[in-house]
Length: 206
Image (cartoon, rainbow, N blue to C red; front, side, top):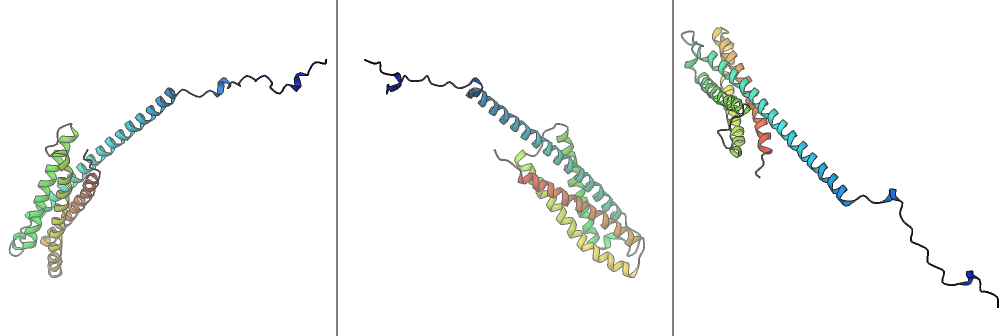
């Protein structure tokens, strides 16, 4: 009897399972998780460093603006307080000029206190105002002083313009110079209020 050919066998032997090449093996989960954790830690450190740099820049900007406001407020009330030339040419005869002197003194004292406080902070000292309330106090203080200064300017400018129509002399010139210095102080307080508002909006309560 003829031998049956192997090709007629309906159940051929099973072939061995193919093995994946070594270069296609998957990376171990431990290696992947380590890389992810490292990237996350680096991102956190970068974020913290950026925040520190931003806060340092804001503190230095506020210090500069309060220093400028302190200087202009001092010059403003000094010019007006010394503006006494006899008869009607005395500043204390006019309520508007007394008002601008009072607000300039207030702005000088407030900005001087802020300068001392911010220099103390930059030198590593502790803030006398609690951290949560300090930004709110800065924002309100800058806003109030800026508002009072623009109010005093609004009262003093028409009076000075009226006087200069009749007589332009050393009294009206000194009054105009004092008003100009108070206006520059107002600008410094206004920009400082913007910085204080930005810091307040970034306040975290965690």
